[in-house]
Image (cartoon, rainbow, N blue to C red; front, top):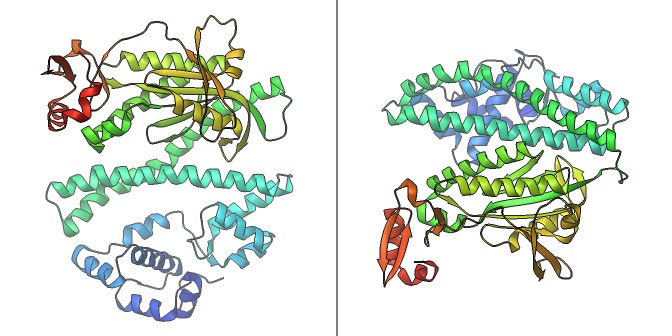
Length: 447
């Protein structure tokens, strides 16, 4: 252990995992200042991080000389909890009564491998881990939870910092601020906003904890006869049927706006049908439902919501039900794999389900039509699939370039008479792309 304000080059090198020569060089550049060990270890981490990303220490020093100490605020935010003394990982294990190898596993699961030592706050967290183990929580289960905490909150932190940088710092820069003036303006907003983050995280955790406990109540009431770690769920995937041509035609920013709109209607429909959004990858959502009926209700509902949008891409939806493994906040197994493959087999505006799921909704009044047996990638044997019929079919004009379904009543669509065929496009941009390569798109144009 090294106390604050008593550090020398050898101690700082040992605690940061750097060589004495590197520490001396960074000190001579003015990047390591004072005698505070915690601050200088954090500064060393930031210097090495920047170097790994292609910005050498000499460049960091040059920018700091021009714009002010670039490391100061980032070091301060990292140390705002008051970290106190710094320990090696082995020392931390001894103080908490944990095996060193276990602490190494905990460090990896918690995403702390880039942190050279353990601070007082880390010791407190390790004590919590030790307490959980004393109450009988299995090590592998505990490590699962730590990975979920680290990964989920990592996304929260990443989103918060990226949003601030793009929409505050960059806006100041566009307005003409630069150097120390830009840094000062950014910090004047960042400092008060930073204090809002942890209360917000706690608020949303409480709300999600309430929802999770309601679901847990049902598990206790049903006491399903499944193996430990296994649940019975209806798994559903939904994506935009023309996302790739949409992105190509409209650009990343416009396509991202459409995905944002899609995300809103997914969440609305999920809330209405007891659905859990497991994850989103690009334009695809994976959801879990307690029953087949709620899954089908969601599929019907989100298709109706999509059709209600004035100009919106079509959806592909697929679902299957059965046993799933729950690990690290996610679902795994053959049921999930089959649901994903069913979705891949769906055409635009088509909602496909398996025979197993169809049997679960018998007598519900939901109409289904067989589409026959399909060979699905990675699935042994053909799979009998059924289409969930919409309550009313919406025949809409489709932009042949970007795949957007058009509502002519809202205006904005562009008409083109192409070789005697009426072609409707969502914008002048799509019209120009059509005219540049009519052979590519004319086969999908309808009059």
